[in-house]
Length: 281
Image 1 (spheres, helix red, strand yellow):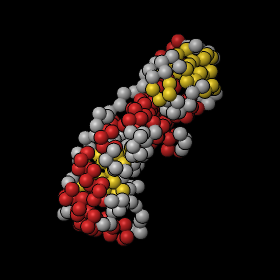
Image 2 (cartoon, one colour):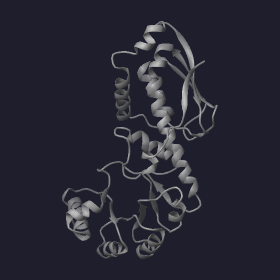
Image 3 (cartoon, helix red, strand yellow):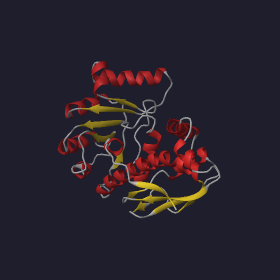
Image 4 (tube, one colour):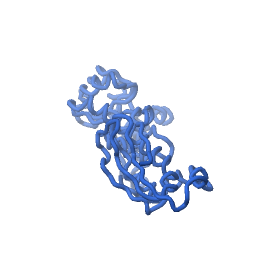
């Protein structure tokens, strides 16, 4: 993962939240000059993610802590594996421990869940996407973990793509008015953004196709048969995306409809963190 200034800032905030005015548990019983070694022990099978984030956590706590890396992001890990070892101030390694684990456990959990979904549709050619259903201030980490798992990112936020959803359409006065307003807005502000519009029925799909002016149609809460029909109607004139109510058990049924993309909110908001621990050696 690229450690940008934004990433550094978010990690600093997380450390500040945890450390406060000091790690008194470590200070009270470990001499300042004490040095030791620790290992990141994997306790559950899955996909590893967040190594670079862990390295940055350590750097911000104590840049003298060294890491010997054995397993990198995207590696399939198993219970008992050691991802890396650390050497340095015993106090400072313990101070960094929980923040490091919080990032890596959640990111690895997301990568693991994503990989499970990706494997289910690898024979179909469909592209799986994440959503904006992320933990506040954790989006950059969670969306990166999705890519480690093998899926792709949808828009990052409200600013990098226009998505005209049901509420936008209803407030705007209908599909046609929403599309016209979006294109007028882009022209008036000299902006270039892709426009995606949500449809709730095949009639909505027909209206979008007749009007034009968007790059992608979302089939929201359609059945696989409805999506198959919608894909035929679109006939490659626009990108197509399926979303809503799609679970692991039905994913393959949706993937074989011919739709280009399937967005899965569960990648980031219905996952279980991967179990691991940082242990003294």
